[in-house]
Image 1: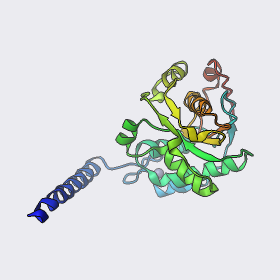
Image 2: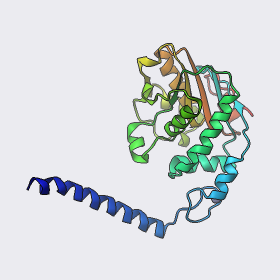
Image 3: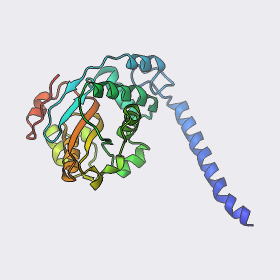
Length: 246
Ligand SMILES: [Zn+2]
C-alpha cells in the first residue's frame, strides 16, 4: 500500500514530462525552429552560423559610465552578434554560451582590471522562472571557469520587476530600474565584474553598480557581449555621465 502511494506521484510526474515532450514535439512539427541568424529550419542557431560567430573578430568598445570603474562591450549589436544574443537570451540556444563567453574572456584579457568576483546582472525571480535561465548568469559562470575567478550571483538581487528595458526609451530606462537591485554584505571591499548580454544606455548596469557600492564594493567593472552603435546621441542626453561611441 505504502509502495503504491509513493509511486503515484512518480507516475504523475512521468506522465507530465511525457505530455510536455509530446507538446514540444508537436509545436516543433507545426512551427519548426529556425536559425536566429540565417533562418534555416530545424536549428535555433545552425552549425554554419555558429562557426561564423566563433570567427567573428573582437571589436572591443570602451564605454565611460558614472558609477563604474570600467565598462566595455565585445562588438556591435548588429548582424550575427545581435542574432546570437537574441537566440541565446530568448530562444534557448544555449550552445551559444561558449562562443559568447569566449568573447568576454578575450575582451577582459585586454583590460587590466583586478577582479575578485563575477556578478551577473540578475533577472527578477518571476522572469527567470518564466525563461528557465538567466542568460547573464550562464555567461558569468562560463567566464568564471575560464579565468578562475568565483561567480557570485547571490551577491546581487533584483528586488522588483522592471518589465523589459528594451521596450523603453533611453530617458525612461533610468527611472524604470532605479532602486531595483540590492547587494549583500559579502561585496564589502571586493572588486566586482558585472556581466550583461547587452549594454544600451547603461542604466541597468549603473543601478547594479550603485547597489554594490552601497555595500562598499571596492571597485565595479562591467562587460557585455554587445552594444548598439547608434544610441550615442540619445545616451549622451541622459544625466548620468554616459559616453558611448565606437
Ligand atoms: Zn544559420
